[in-house]
Amino acid sequence: MEKTNRVDLSSDDRQQLKDQTTSGTMKVRALKRAQILLKADSGPEGPAWSDSAIATALDVAPGTVANVRRRYVERGLASTLDGRYTGHNHPVVTGEVEAHLIALSCSAPPSGRERWTLQLLADKLVELKQVEHISDETVRQTLKKTTSNRG
Image (tube, rainbow, N blue to C red; front, side):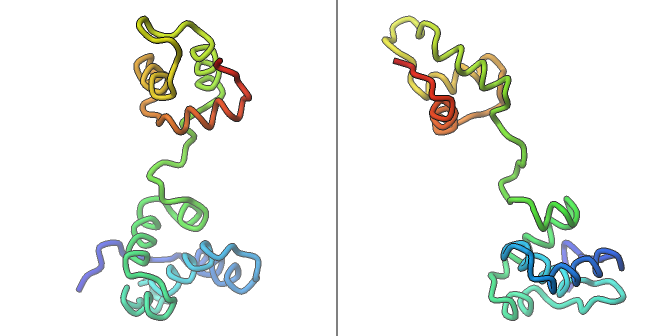
């Protein structure tokens, strides 16, 4: 059966992964991902293990192996080892967005409202095209971080 996301490590990538996995300085998640890639390598030097064999040997779920393969094919080695699997690795709240949020929270609330709610602030930021999406929890954390007093 042909694997959907075939891992073909270059000699340099393979050596880098071997060096990193034996150095004892990697974080556990990155170490597991590196081990998965080394076992999944279908290149000339690689063992080309199946996902189920890798999952059993490294005590991870088969889906984890598939996700690491996909991440490597889509984003490369560095992102696979260091990145989170959130779907985006960019901050939603930049300094500019934070400034707009603070100014908005200090402004008069919408008509018919006594004060801004977190959800109203989030919706307004999207409406003003400051962000594509933002949750009320992100708004809360940002305002808390800035020690802004909305009251």
